[in-house]
Image 1: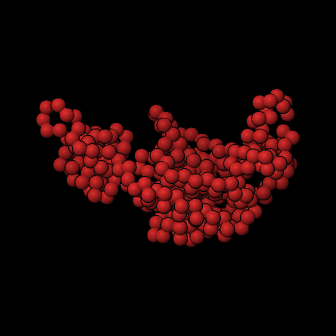
Image 2 (image 1 turned 90 degrees about the vertical axis):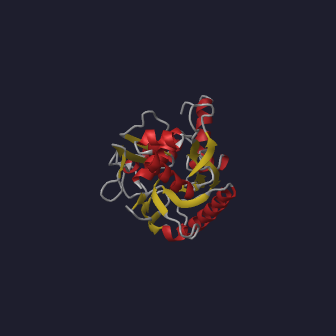
Image 3 (image 1 turned 30 degrees about the horizontal axis):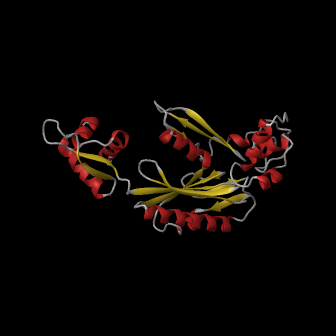
Length: 298
């Protein structure tokens, strides 16, 4: 498995490559690499493009690249004001995507999960039409998720507590693994793996600021989860203990001062009116930005 991984990563990072070039990069014999490549081709992870480097001395090798019609990951997000689903191929390209406005705050989990499952099936079908094969589902939620489980322990901005979202979502893609995690954690992993940094950062804090404020800590290239998986909950750190009560049960949390709704209110805008003017993800901040650009000092 380790050698298969080395070969696949070499082609992903530097392909198209011939078998000989892969062998030189990973430090294995050509015979070993050829056996590994054959297995990756059989599993639909790599494809051969035909002879490479025409006109050079010796028999031309057959160039290898990631299979554009191979496995796909399905990613889904439950937001406070939206639901989103995408399909991503082996190269990290988004091949199908849908996003809808959805007022999920204090909404019962069951209808939210039913609606999300429908979107997952829709995107998976689009991916299959493009020749892709969905192999798993990852779901981002704005709340605390118990480590190595699909249990949302608490999502204050949704009003959810003790909700296991796995069973419902597993019916959307039967037989495939489902991963559930905090949205900031998954965002940090995306930044680590697909952020386009050269060199890739090994130690950083990723902060996401929307209706809620999330954060994730990456140390030595690994996500820091903490004992229970709750590390990085920046939005619910009390910055003014005497401050207003927060949905999480604390007082004076950072979200009460720097969350989207707090910023809108501080600028004199009603979050509800702003949402009515510009529904959907990012709509309320659009109102704020337009006001600021027009010279509104507040």
